[in-house]
Length: 263
Image 1 (cartoon, one colour):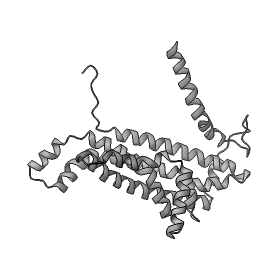
Image 2 (cartoon, rainbow, N blue to C red):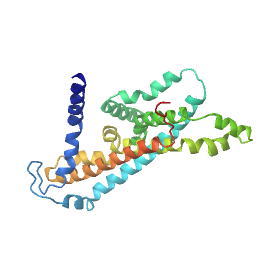
Image 3 (cartoon, rainbow, N blue to C red):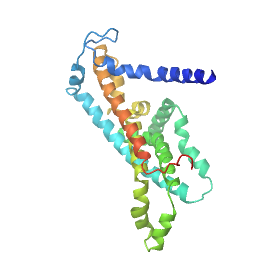
């Protein structure tokens, strides 16, 4: 009885979270400007309208720039930190990891306002570069978590064998370590990119006159006649995000040794 109650609770919880999101693509094909059942008809004209929206395309390019820069920098910083954490016994490692992960526990609106005030005090302008710096605070913990897990599953005897064969530290890393941690690097890139691409509040406070795609969508919600196009754009972002997260999870598990049943 308790097991069935737990399953029912889990089902209700997941339905509460995801049913509203899954309904989004349905309304994006509705031949009406109003969100209501029953649907008035099927159309793809809202998707076709996206290609003619120059402001949306500009915001998309901005998001791609920010997401790519954030993914590369987050993965690089996460790679260096994960290497140090797993290879060397350093004092204060736990405290350092906790400090790096702290932005995940701070509400995004608090983080965005704090960074906005910091930029004002420093006299720095609002820009896409400022958005990248803000997104690094959010994305580096994700990259670090993925890469630490990959390094911890790495057989260090392979590095020692490479050193015994005369390879220096750099060539050992490039020829031995890098290929084995590559799935973790790719997973980190994907997760950091999609996290940055979808992030709204930090970008809202720091982007200035160069909005990212989520900021652009927020601005369009003021106009009821733009709602169907926003729904179509949201459906595309939702589908792409799910696909990238699934791909990141698949890549992350490549080469991971799983225990045999009964072993």
